[in-house]
Image (cartoon, helix red, strand yellow):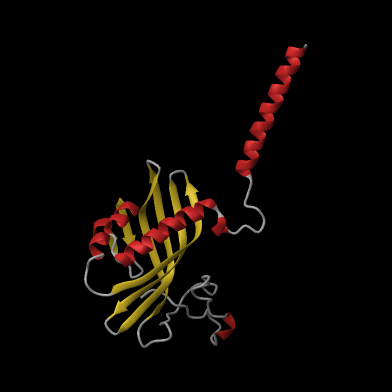
Length: 205
């Protein structure tokens, strides 16, 4: 009889332990916890910070570490380049990067694949001053041997400031609602459109 009671107690303990583990795995973010506080966001923010520093300092070795050999880049102007071309561009003469900030907004995990979205601000030193570009990015990472490496990147410029120009050039947009990106561009108000159509919004060159 005591042996049966002992087995029953062990069984109950095991079931409670499994239930607790499942509850912890399924537990959503606590109320008031922002997306940027999630562990995966912090992890990829660290990678994006390394990326930004490596671009400004022309750090080839860090870029080789962060970018997969299969890496493909689509710039805000539509240029498609490979990993080797990106590494070679670090040492090309021309507009020199002054600073680069990439802020991770969201991370979606699909097994060993991660889709990272965020905003960026990049500044270059041009011949006649300084040029600045602000926009959004999407980076696709693949995990192999416990290491995340970016396999695809795409940027969309939202605001571009050139020396001597205080306002960014704007083009017409067919978007149904005003474009809004936190910290970059708040979007025009629909009431400002005299024709009743959607207002103009900045777009990449």
